[in-house]
Length: 268
Image (cartoon, rainbow, N blue to C red; front, side, top):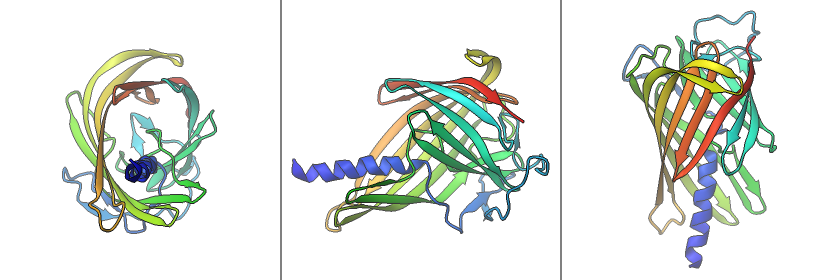
């Protein structure tokens, strides 16, 4: 059984690479007017804009109010309960950065690009994955190497469907062993009806969005061995209210369910 111990550890480490990687300088932004989302060059923000100077256009999505300093507090109901605060900490003319700070001490950072109100996830903050792994004889770091599609369209009607794909690549080191890895994440989403949802923060009219999340993780353990591929699928139901954002989500993975509910929010 010894040969399987390190590959199992590698797989666990790769799965933690999904949230806070670095963005390479040549990443592309899809054109919101094209269904095929053909890419145009994406430029890193050169300066942070203040709330007063921020134009309404690029990030003005009805279901996700992008405002500098906007804050949401959530609790997670699962086998490992927790509470976290999500805050928009930076906004530019081309995107924004959000940060989740958990009561358990974990911090995640997510980065998004914006195009005519369409939101494109470059580095996801949600999903329960850490940014990097480091420790005695172990370190790993992944980067976003490509994406296709739009994560949250600016206009959503009942029955609409869309797909978003994100690719991560990097290297994991355990002792003297260096193993390249790759993660391909695909979201297949469909919009449901507007429903009445009650959570601790209040009662909202919220659009239900159901996404199937497919992750294919490939790890090359040793040069003389074939790559090891692991596949995971989850079903995520989210309820998003106009002018408020996410008010509730239910995620089911491998028979395990986690529910996230809005406790309070403040939007400048």
